[in-house]
Image (cartoon, rainbow, N blue to C red):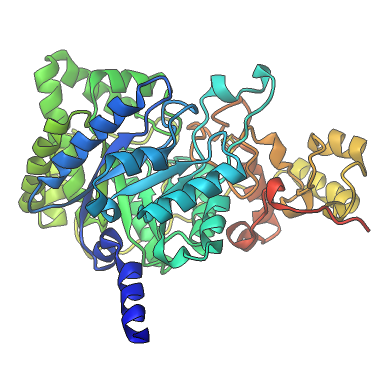
Amino acid sequence: MKDLLQLNFDFEKSKNRLMKHLKKGGFTTLFEVKSPSRDSDFRTSVEFLKSMDSAVGKIKGLYTGLAITDKSDSINSWNVANFATEGLSKSNLDNNIIYISGKNGKLGDITDTIKQCSNSGLRNIIPVTGDGFSDELKPAQGKRQPCFDSIHSLKIIQGLHDSDVIYPGSAMNPFKYSSLDIFPQYFKLVKKINFGAQFIVAQAGWDMMKLQELRWFLDLREFHIPTIARLILLTPDLVENILRGKYPGVHISRDFKNILEKENRYGFKQFASAQWRRLQLQVAGCRLIGYSGVQISGIERPEHISTAAIKIKEALKEFKDLSAWNTAYMSHISRADMAPFEHRFYLYKNLLKSTNNQKPEINPDGIASCSIFTKLHYLLCKSMFSRDNFLVPDEHRLTKKIFTGCTSCSYCRLPMTHYICPEQCPKGLANGPCGGSRIDGRCEVIDKPCIHIKRAKTAGWLNEIDILEENYIKHPDMVSKVKVQ
Ligand code: SF4
């Protein structure tokens, strides 16, 4: 009897087909659906999700699922776990991915949503910090609305009694083009892997060299975990929104913009067919450079799912060799520079060079050096505040305000953040950057450099990069008491 119970238990635990498929090295195609804003009718949105789920269920010869994103258009969305549980077929829940956004998120709500997903069989979870629409987050609106860092959500998953049935992933933005901006992204990625992320979804972009850069980084660091590339099927409206900066962290280079304008000039049909072809080339390229799948955004009608599936199957059949694919891809993009002017930093020098056996050659330009002013700031703060997380918050209030912009939060994290106050980040992130910084490394919400760039430079000077990858800094809500000595 005991053995029988054990058998059932193990069967339940291992019932995660997407996880098994990815771990076995299979290729998967996910179609993205947004959880709806509360301004829309919940039942109508659920019916739409059902129709997308049913369209995915009819695809043969391709491993498919849906990726349900959370709070993508608004912080005021219906709960993603309720939405997914209502709209997805019960027999197929483990083939889908659920995003849980920390945008305007609170510890209790996020914990409940994660538990709800796990209890209802939604096992593939990607916590994201959430992008910040500037009008929702800017301090001028009165109270700032911090985001709940995905690192904290990963820690919550690790702490659940059934954490081994959840397959947690991580989102990452590899499309960064200055050395200042790219290194902090990778430090945070390693931290997410250290805290439980078992697969990665790369944020949207068109630069295949950046996608290969991510794969090479993981291989060189010996993180043998699956990666999925998020690809966007563009429409003229989407292009316009991206160019207007509506999607933080998603960039279109000047060359690529020219190509899109040219495609658009000949009418919608030609534009659409060029986008399908580009998507085909990207999907095939992703598989050839070692990706385990793609997550396709921009497919908004169930009938387009079968078209996409046919095109993806054709592309995977057409290209079996990186060299042939490279020739076709370069010709399709007219050898355009996909890096946005004037930034074009890559971690490796020989990306997308034709053969499958190409070995990474590391770009010797590392992280930029730390200025004298930053060094002095660090040394001064260290001499004054190095024990401040053990003191009552009111200690040193004035000097801390002058030197770090202290906002007197309940739990001082300065000694853990190289004396750069995380409250200076509009999202309140202490464990590393979000993916939304602008192309020049400035913050996506306010017009200042991202604080995590300054921190990475300081850590580089002190030879403490490992701290950025390994040390977990608790969210103030997760700290029960401030120690008083
Ligand atoms: S300071 Fe950096 S991490 Fe914080 S919101 Fe701005 S870009 Fe994101």
